[in-house]
Length: 260
Image 1 (cartoon, rainbow, N blue to C red):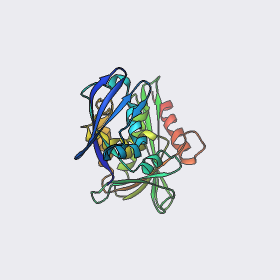
Image 2 (tube, one colour; image 1 turned 90 degrees about the horizontal axis):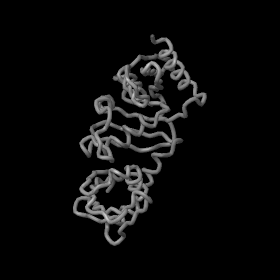
Image 3 (tube, rainbow, N blue to C red; image 1 turned 120 degrees about the horizontal axis):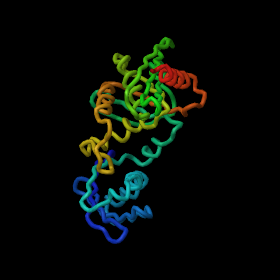
Image 4 (cartoon, rainbow, N blue to C red; image 1 turned 90 degrees about the vertical axis):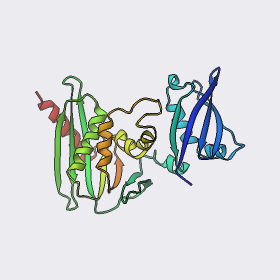
């Protein structure tokens, strides 16, 4: 049954509430939502309404993240629902997020333990508002536990983007590896690929705000580099004495310090 691809359409408004039609294949239901008070009314009298109630956590994430001004009559959005327990697990920072893009059958899920004998890619980036540049570092540990490092400067002014560039450059240098563990302190890098991108593509690369996704060319390059790969994503807290993450952070800052 899951994942379910659904569509929402705002069909009317009444004071502070919006009436929204939700549909999936031949099923449909109506909900009411107040963006100001975050008040949601669900219909439990039909099958799709029951499904939405079972997956209320995911529906609320979409509605709560929309800015108030992006609620208007005629707004449409395609979105995907996964099993609710899986969706909740994706926000557990202690778990590994798996992105299996082999055999043309993309699967994402969470797991508790590492898979042994992986090439590991540690990444980080740094941004200087003064110099208006970013630096990236990709530290690659092969299966023999030897390290290789890649780094560079980019004339961009976006710290989140440079975190993604670090992963892109790292993956380019291990293109032959099928199984890779990516260790990063950027949730943007992880969630963008494993959660957000699927919905963006359903909406012709638009966000839940109805706006064009920023840095589409980088996201598309990132996705292309994951073809036929099995990736494990591990999130680590920045500046928390993680050995390899600290090395990447130090190198990234030194690169900017040396840049004239």
